[in-house]
Image 1 (cartoon, rainbow, N blue to C red):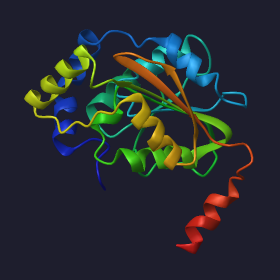
Image 2 (cartoon, rainbow, N blue to C red):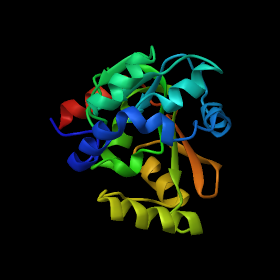
Image 3 (cartoon, one colour):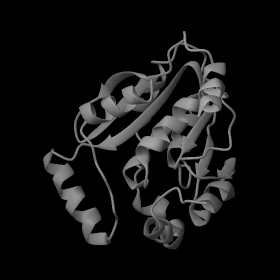
Image 4 (tube, rainbow, N blue to C red):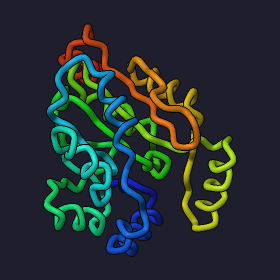
Length: 210
């Protein structure tokens, strides 16, 4: 099985799992909720993909349904479960979820760690019900803070890839999602909605043809 992060990234997050929540600030819930509002269906079933210790899940659960944390790092996922969160150890590129099964997927400050982000986005689009949304929070690499973060992650040894909001919107579009930049700046948020006129069954037929 391929890993949710690059192999070096997984080992790093396993090592720091116990300290992660001490070092990281709470997730900003406002922009994430604004992204979820782009949905055209009730948002009740949510996946927090590459959710680590459940940082975004904790913030979102205070405002609505609690997401299920999906992560490949056993150490990070153990921390989420110890905090009472439902967790699934899985690869972002092969989610163990049927087509159209969820109303929303969130990926917070983690897409840049994934070895195949386009595949992860396509997989998130697959599991969304019509009208459901993918909400991604990422870091803008051309801002002053963003340039510093790019250098810092490279120094740590991460093989990270960062995108501008427009570039991420293009990736969403390639996965068949209708996009919106919810929040711009260093820590930006992009939302992509699965069109309501695309039936879930079309995904199954598409795979059968291939």
